[in-house]
Image (cartoon, rainbow, N blue to C red; front, top):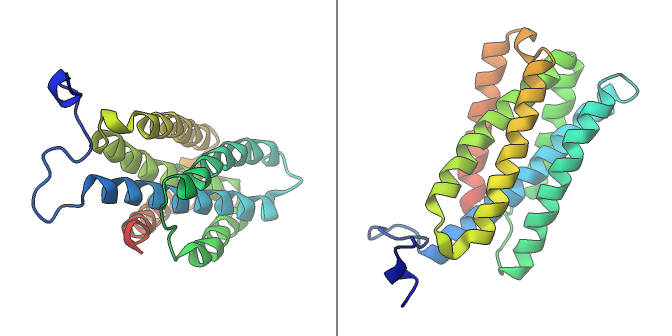
Length: 190
């Protein structure tokens, strides 16, 4: 009996004319997640450039180490699955570091607010990807599920460390989330 006959949902099942093919969907997932994890690594590098030597360094290094594992996973999938990485990595290299450093310059609360905003945007993004991928992409879905749980851990760490007490928290959070959503849409395709 075929996999389709067992009731297992496949990637792209139910797609409409003009929707990405299953292959294009997977390429977009890998491309954008690679870019996003690269950007996250750079955000933490920017925060560490400012907060190195403070009591926040160990906490930030913990989150950065998890992001590095995520990045390494997607970096391995790029050649394995023959996916073109985003052409925007040089932009995310600068933008991620700048965002991390700028928020850290505003203090640890703003750095944590940045983490919360980014991770909330990524949670929504990963949740949609997990729902879109079928059983034929179980390994990729598994990575996304695991990484999403770790991103939510980062969000919770930020909230536990006074993110919501950052100056202009709601404005800062909304601006960062909007930027993340634009970066996601652009990186999927470019």
